[in-house]
Image 1 (cartoon, rainbow, N blue to C red):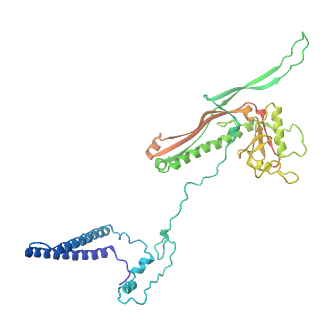
Image 2: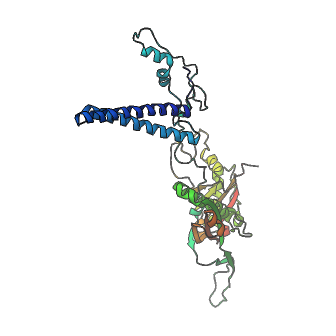
Image 3: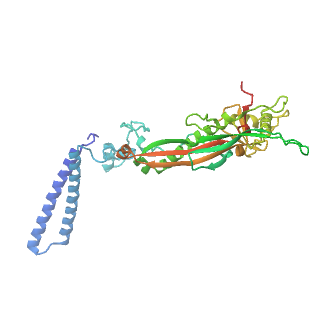
Length: 402
C-alpha cells in the first residue's frame, strides 16, 4: 500500500461504503427484532442493546459523510490535511511498523527512516518544523531620544489675556545729583524710556490618525499626545534662546543680549573664569545673574578640568548633585551652539507670558476626516517673551573653538 495521502473524495467514498454497511446491519437487527416479537410477543434486552449500538454507529458515519461532502463542495481538503505530522505519528502509521505490530510473533525490530532533517523552515518541505516556533514580541515601543527642556524654568512665568504685551523700558538715565550749597540751584537729572510691544505668537502642529487605530491601540493616543507636546517644547526652547523676532518668531534672549566683555583682565583665563567674569559683567549692569546656559559638550569640558595634580576642579565622578557653577544653576541644552554661553538675570531681566498653555485637541470637524473616519490631533500654545533688560544677559564664547 502506498503512502500517498488520500483525497477528500477517496475518504468520502470509504466512509460512505461503511455507512451503507451500517444501514444494512441495522436493517438485519430490526428484522430479527420483528421476527422475535411475532414469535414471543416481546423484544429481548440483548436485541435492544444490539440495535442501539448499530444506530449509534450509523449516526456517527452519517455525520462523517456530511462533513466530507462539505469539504468536497468547497474544493478543500480535510481539516488536518496541511498539518505537519510528528515523527511519532509517522512511525505508527508506517506500513512496516503496522505489519510488525499485527504479527503474532513480535520478535525482531521495526524501524522508520526519517530522511529529512528537522529544521526551523516554514516552507512546505519535509522536516520543516518552523511553524512550531513563535516570535516573541517585546511589549511597548522603543522611543526615539528626546531633548530635556529646561530654559523655560529659568525665566519668570506670567500669564496674559491679550494678544500683545506692552512694557515701558528705561533707555537712559543722566544722574546729576550733587552736593548743593544753601540757596543754590539744584541740578536736574534726565531719564528716557521707550514703549516696547511684543505680540503673542503661536506654536502649533497637527497629526492625523484613523479612529480605528486610536480605539484599538489605546497606547497610541497617549504616544501621539506626548509627541505633539514634545514637538512644541522643542521649538519653544529654540525660540526663547535664538528667535530673531521676524515674522512669527519670538524675539529671543540671545539676539538681544549684551556681548561678553571681561570687566577685568586675567592671565590665561579658563572656561570657569569666563563664566565668573560674565556674572561680574551682569552684576555691574545692576542685574545679578541667576543662571547659566551652555551646550552639554561645554559643560562636560568644564566638569573634567583638572588641576596640576590631576584632581578634578569641580567635577565629582561619584557625585549626583545638580549642575551648578559659581553657586548658580547650569542648564545644558543643545539649543545653544557649542563653545557659546549665556549668563544672565533670567528672573529679573525677562518674563514669559502664556496666552494659551500647551494643549492637545482632537476633532473630526472637516468633511474629509468625517468621511474617511480620520481624527486630527491639534497641539498648540500661544506665548510672548518680554526681555526687560538686555544688558542683564551676557552672551559670549569660551574661546576653545576657532
